[in-house]
Every structure is written in C-alpha cells, then in structure tokens.
View (cartoon, each protein chain N blue to C red):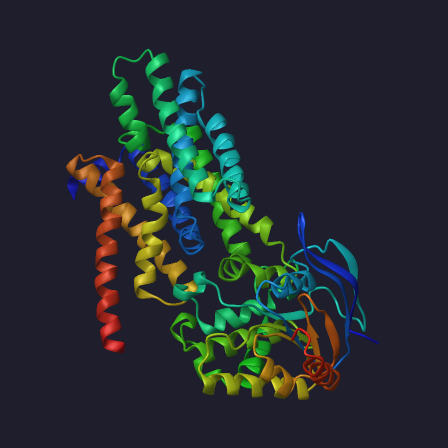
Amino acid sequence: MALLKVSNLCLGYENRKVVENLNFEVLPGDYLCIVGENGSGKTTLIKTLLGIKKPISGEIVRGDGLKANEIGYLPQQTSIQKDFPASVHEVVLSGCQGHLGKRAFYGKEEIELVKKNLQRMGIENLENRCYAELSGGQQQRVLLARALCAAEKMLLLDEPVAGLDPKATAEMYSQIRDLNKSGTTIMMVSHDLEAALMYATHILHIGKHLFFGTREEYLEHLAKDAKEGGAKI
Amino acid sequence: MDKLIMYLQYPFVRNALIVGVLIALCSSLFGSTLVLKRFSFIGDGLSHVAFGALAIASILKLTNNMILILPVTVLAAVLLLKTGQNTRIKGDAAIAMVSVGALAFGYLLMNLFSKSANISGDVCTTLFGSTSILTLSDADVWISIILSVVVIALFVYFYNRIFAVTFDEDFSVSAGINAERYNLMIAVVIAVIIVLAMNLVGSLLISALVIFPALSAMRIYRSFLKVTVCSAILSVVSTLAGMIASILYSTPVGSTVVAADVIVFGVCWLIGILKGRKNA
C-alpha cells in the first residue's frame, strides 16, 4: 500500500499552471528524490504535499494510516532564524507542536522524544546552545531532529545540503541514508543530481519533461535521451 | 523617600503604578515575537490609528473612550495583517499609509471640532501621554486590569505555539497548526496592548515600550524562554523606575519611562559586548 499516491495533480498559482499531470507514488521505505530546474515547481509541490497550499486539480491520497500532519518537514532556512534567540532544545521541542492538542505545555513524553532524536542525530551535546550560533551542518541536524519529533514514518527534505561545505554535505547525506535504512521513508528535493543518483531508490523529475520511476529506469531514460541527441532533461 | 511615601498615599498614584506595571508586563511579553517576526512597524502604525480613534472619540464626547478606540485599533490590526499577505500594496507601505493618514486626520478633527482652549496641549497629551496615567477613572483601572490578565493568560497558554509560529511558520503549518489564526491572535493582542499603553506613554511612544525590553533582553540571552522572562523583568523595572522618577522630579511620565527603557537597552548592549568577548 502506497504511503502517498499522487494522481493527475496540477499545481500553480491563480492563473499560471506550473506543473500538470503529475503522477507518482511513494511506498514505505522508499527514498524518492525530486529534481528539476529552478522555477519548475519543486517548492510548490512540497507545499502542496504538506497541505500548506491547495492544488488546482488532481488528488493526493494518503495510505497506510499516514495522517496529514505525519510528514516530518525540513524546510529551507529563513532569514528570521539567522538572529533568532532560541536554544537547540527549544527548536527541537517545537517539532512536537502537533502533539499538543489542547494542552498548553509539553509533557515528559515530548522531552524524552527530544532526547532520543538529539542522540540519533549525534547532537545531544548541543542541546543548550543557541541555534543561530551553530554551523550550517549543525543547524541542519537540529532541524532534522525537529522533523523526526514531528513524524518518524516519512520525512520531506527541502534542499537539505544547501549552503553546506563538502564535508558537512557528505555527513548530511549519510545521516539521511541511515534514517532511510532504519525504516523512514524519505522524499528529498535537490539540485544535486549526482547525489540523487547515488542515494535515491526513485527519481521524480519535474519541469517541461516529467519523469517518474526507479533510479535504474531514470539512468536508462537519460542514456536513451543522450543517444537520440534530444533535449537533455 | 519621604516624598515618595507621601505620594503613595494618594489612590491615583497607586492606581497609576498598578496599571503601569501591568502594561509594561503585557507589552514586553509580545515584544520579542513582534521584533522577531519583523512586525515592529505594525505596532507603530497601530498606535497612530489609536490616536485617530481617540480624536474621534473625544469629539463624540464618549463617556469612555475605550469603547471606540479598542474596536477600531483591533480592526486596523486585522486589516494590516491581511494586506501584509496580499501583495497588491506591500505590507510596509500599507502600514505607512494607515499610520500617517490616521495621524493627520486625528489632528485635523481635533482642530476643527475641539472646544478646548488649549488644543496643542490636548494633542501633546494624547501623543506623549503626559498626565492621563494619573487621571485614570476607576472604570479605566478595572478595564486595564482585566485586559492585562487576559493578555498574560493568552500568552502563557499559547507560549509554545507562539514560539513555534514565530520561529518557523511553514513547519508549524506542516505539523497541522493553524498559523494564520495565531498571527491574527498576535495582531489583535498587540492592538489591545497599544490601546492600554496609550494611557501610560501616549500614542507616539508606545512602540518603545513594546520593542525596547525585547531588544535589550536579546543582547544578553540566547534562548526564547530566557529572552521572554528577562524582557518582562526589564520592562517592569524600567517602567517602575521611570514612573517613580517622573513623580519625584515632576517630569512627563511617558518620556521618562521610555528614557529608562533606552538606558536599560544601553546597559544590556554593553553587557552583551562584554559577554561576547568573554566567550570569544
């Protein structure tokens, strides 16, 4: 049973369609990489999958008991966060906000969850540091721990290595791979086609030419395209 | 000291101190959110709207000005928030328009319709709040106390969500939180605080009361909880100090309180620099 099945999805703004006829599905344990040029609608797709934005038409069906707010999200960093006074503990704890319900404060369970996910990301020593003062790689791990607090089944990562140096990039990728191996389904938006081909099980290419399939199918598709001398996607 | 004790015997001085402390507490709580969300100007714009509403209220000779000022300012807060999201008129331009417009109309109306012999004195009082904190009626005091308690209760109850929505709105929405509703709540609460604070510092100086304590606390502390607690304490202390100084030396209340806030900011800034050096 697919965790997420997207059929005939059409995305865009009031009078401008960005993506049409989008079809793909995500199975438990998949590592889906979403690639495409700038302006091809990657960010719009993410916002639609998360329910921040409504699609123009088409449908997204969640399966396997996945609830609307059970996709852990790793957004790109915002300018507000650059000088925001917040400790790592506070940021990761805010990942539990969906569990609050009518309660005003977090309980023991949430504190435990924070501890667990900080350990999982190997950053328990940073718990009382200020988020804004950390290095880029450390900040991404904090946000990853926050996403894990929100949902363990499925993560949606928006350019998780943007702005990281090569060492931090490699570490981030291996951390994501480890999460995937331990059973978390990953959807990752990326510019980095090379990395996508190295780690992903499935590729979704959006833009003028749509493609969805396994990594192997995508490689064949690329090879065929190159042979025909057609427009490279 | 004797002079202070003598003044404290007067009920209006005690009322002024109670209301002053409550206003200081309320305004500082939402200050950090406002500063961090880059909403500082909304506070400024709303205070001018409140001035315009006050001018209308005094022309209509309402027994209690708050009946008109509060709903008008809340409405303006909601509208400013909405225009900030639609991009036809950019948020900051809309705020500038509303704020200058309300200021001009307020003054115009006061000039045209006021029967008072001392118009510039009246205007000065509403803009800088020189004496209104000392002339509160019992009803004003109770309204201020009730509204402050509501504001503080809202802040404590929604503290975790306010932090989350301030830090990362998109993430909150993805976790199933209705961020728009919290933005609306923040805007409405700010409007209420501004109307309350008008009595203390007058409409031109309100933003100072909202943003200075938060900015001061951010020089020293680097976690949201500590910044919030510290700005509440700084705000109460500098407001009390400002009010007492103004009573003892007969200076205008509003500007003395804001001057105290500025001095506290300077001290915090220095502490921040020294702390930074020690860590480096």
